[in-house]
Image (cartoon, rainbow, N blue to C red; front, side):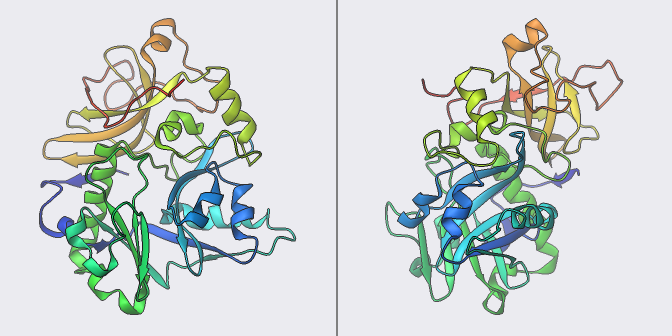
Length: 332
């Protein structure tokens, strides 16, 4: 999956709240919806009752992230935004754990649209959350500040609305791809992780910096994958982290392994072409681990230290590391 964006992020369609066609919505409704999610995802879903959208990970029993979920406290049930290509498999996996719980899980992509607004000017004033708030519903339209761990001084917003009222959000058909690419580039620049089919179940949550983005609760109790995630945190076994890179012209794709000139190795998780170069996120071995040859292969990485790509099998990539807008070390 290679993505191209020739122009700046804040130009043309990217300034509007246009539908993000690559995303889907799963809805969890019923009396046990929040309790059910509490036992499945990494964040504390009780916070949804306070009207807070949450970034979270749904992981396998082995602690590897199956999907990154944006959870919204919608009045009809908890809505989870995730890549369309993961929606069906994630839905089926979660349904296996429903058992006797009073929860219904549905794919609502045909009924609701998801749009992205890069700043408040693209959202109707009546729909903006009040100052200091993060979520609001007005006349059937839900607007949520994108959870980013409180790092961004210029917040972005999700706009979710029923499709019969979504013509303005969808925009022109030829703008849909540009809207998705602009949103993904904004995610890269914000250091916001995502997994797709090529990277699902490849990484433990901390490798995607989810612990740095307020997406993991270490106090809420058990959930699927919790034992591995907690052990990784408390035993200091985080040998890889999400990094932001500028890559030279080439053939790059999500899930592609790479080795940098400084000896670090890893795997691309997101990549968008900008002009002649590419901006990307990649899970890479930390500098100390690279120097000692420790690639942490036993903790959910599934080949993050594999042979490089983007050139010859032994060729190191001349990548430029770009800063992330948040601290890259967990607080003690």
